[in-house]
Length: 374
Image (spheres, helix red, strand yellow):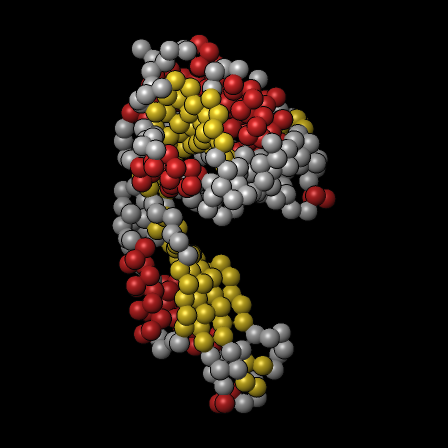
């Protein structure tokens, strides 16, 4: 039962990058439905690849068993790792993001494999405990391993919480790219009473940062909104009020569309900084590229299933942050994200509707039937 599995998973304190036995639990129960488990740990990260059947096409569900930290426990109505049902909702850390979705995927796969033991191709489930953290040793490493073995996913359905008001009203066929930079603007430390003997990097940087904020990086396209630039952290000074700092650190992020490349963003940013006469050092973090599935059998099957089963016309979009789909997309797989309502993800008193779990599991099973039977 999907609800019971979700409760079991929530009760495990798998704060990223820990798995706390979630994947072993899932592997044990899915073995009874004929699934073969392959554990693929990298570093401190737990990953598992579960398969049933053989050959092409290869349909894979993708999810994660890790969760974000709870924050202050006193703010929660109930213990975040003791699942509790109140007013038709299941409460606990990871209920929506994404242990509820994982439970729905598992039970859908089990029912489908038992009902259709000779289905076409291969069905699979890829789980990692490194989605909410660095995402360095999780899905990225598993996909690299599979590609090296000539295993190629054709259709990838991600159970991330994509819905807004009701299950299926919003699905994602792509995500914007992300690129982060740590900028250090260099100055000369000195006494605030003698500014002519110092060089204040905060003062120097301010006009350049204002220009970056005001820049139109692109106008987006039919699938993506315009690229956004956001400053997320600034730091300078010694803590004393009479010292001009010697450097000023700024952390910023681009969420970008397919209308621009990471290389172009880096080049334009550094050109603007130089034009403002700044002395600086900049560390560009490894980008996550944008990805898009504009059409295909998977997207068609997901949309039609939602229409038929729920009477809802899904809004197909690329909004939100990043997902592990960015590691699968370069292989050529069609990717769609469909999951629970995302209103409480990463919040205190995170929850998922009990009925949502049953609905999702049924939708996932119907999509499998559409693509792999008949």
